[in-house]
Image 1: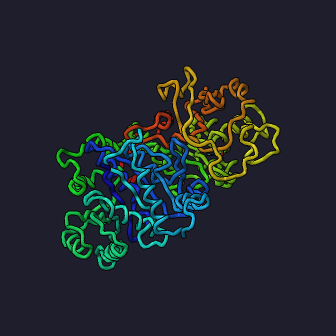
Image 2: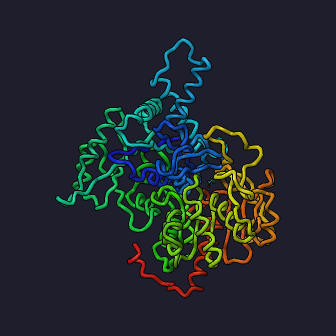
Image 3: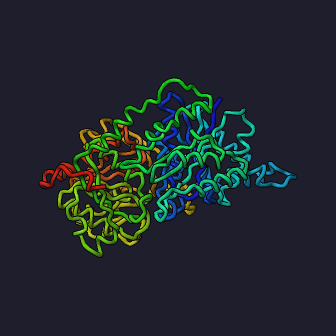
Length: 551
Ligand code: GLN
């Protein structure tokens, strides 16, 4: 029977609950267990698809097209858990299900209430998430509760997990609570009070955490863990320190195993306790991150540059590609509109240019100018989704001479609509879930760079967009050396374009960043970073960098 781990967070948000949850998933898999990963988000949006990246960070997309919280990206980068629409529930999604049942008359005659109706729906959601790829039972289901204990919004979720554990045999559920030990400079010490209060809140609801993971920038000493143990009613060895990582988030699982978390979980849930947690390949990867001696600088020219989380998976994918190329990728984040306002000198000296996906017209011309700069200066370029669409506009205007070429997303007034909607998409009004979402097949052109990088003829990648390259211009692009090298056979639409006479100029309509992991870097990111390294050494820039000074 499936065992359950619930992970809650206290004191403040942004403690890295998603990373910690993903790390626990990895650790258990490396003990030979199957896991599922799930996030319950207390906000009322049905999914994060309609939220601005400024609000919520990146919208992560699954194979089945579900638009989810970015923590699911951590889950996929760390584990093999199969993620589906049942892997992310929000308050909105839960209420939507309950309200449509009420409208159907399923509760006829009764008052519909938070307890039991909403909490029952949450419990059903937890069961639905605890499945492997073949709909079979997993050994351990890991559920992360979004938000911070003490928020009004998260109460129904906490109540539901309390009830969930109450109905299962003792020792079937484990509650992990992640907190912060703030360091007070004035007194030079770590403080435990916020942790005590957060655990107090949880206990009021009826949840006694079994494990406390304490985020801290300074080591937690014996006295301190004794105190936390006593005041929070958690066994001393189950109060664990999670120190700020030195150089990579991928150190977290290694640290947690060193702190004995793997054995604590195994013991508490009566999982096979013998045998080690084999993280050897993971540790080798972390060592590679640490020892990288080369550096490569990539410009990200985007709209949501100020917020690191807005391009989370892209930054992660670049770092994976760095690992594969024994190099550290340094990011130069450039607001697309600044390229127009302040000039192309912002790009001076970078080894590669990446234009990520996005919505909205702001910054569009800046992206197009940056792409032109990369094309003309033979600097490697990688365009993702809107980044591909901008490259198509750029090449149309400046290579094909179609001066006013544009995308119909932002103007209807162009003689050359090189990016347009498919006829089947006209007239769609609803803003939620109306995009081409999730996994689609892509056939690769024989002899293309894309085919060489993937080492395959057919691939599957995830999408999130409405607009497409206009097939009416395909031939003209091909004739000019801008070749459609990946096609979706079912819709006959362009998925990849690559420029022939250039060190690396590739645009993809899909989001490759959702399929990269540190142990399996994505082939196009890998090729892009390799090309950027090549361009760097051709430019005679130094290879070896003192890594300390980079941090
Ligand atoms: N806004 C563009 C579209 O909808 C691109 C979307 C994206 O980059 N994810 O087609």
